[in-house]
Image (cartoon, rainbow, N blue to C red; front, side, top):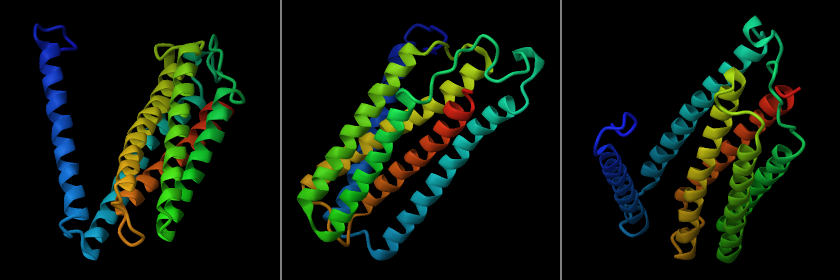
Length: 232
């Protein structure tokens, strides 16, 4: 209704989003309580959660595979409608060796920082784990800021044909995943500060770390295929 400018559409959208976010908050709050205070997360339950997270990441791989498929379908055999060249005629591609390369270094560094935090948790070094998480979150925020700056300064838009569509959909959804992962890590940082994680009981953090490494790997594929290969 909001998209079609119906009266009250914005109110209905806001109400729906508020209800969804509240449901998510209460659900995950209960999961944290069950894991931390009530002792319901036995080894078998944790195994089920691990399988669930793995399957979720696999589904995310398929999600991004669709965007890469669209990109390579159009770039490997460009049609005459776009000039039979890639990038299409009239498109000025973004240099991969400026913001994209800097973002690659930042994201890989954040992956190293979250691994540092993981090893610190395993070793029982709570302060080190906190520092590692804070470093990861800081790098994630910098990455998101640079990505937003790149979008503002990009010489093309999402409406500029197949190149703009595939570029902004792939990198935009990756950016959305970075934001979700950052929120995930912020919650883990708060839980680490509150002493929720131990060396033997920290799946909440492991799930966040797995998700973050997935985001890292997707970015590497984006950098190599869309920025470097696809921009030349």
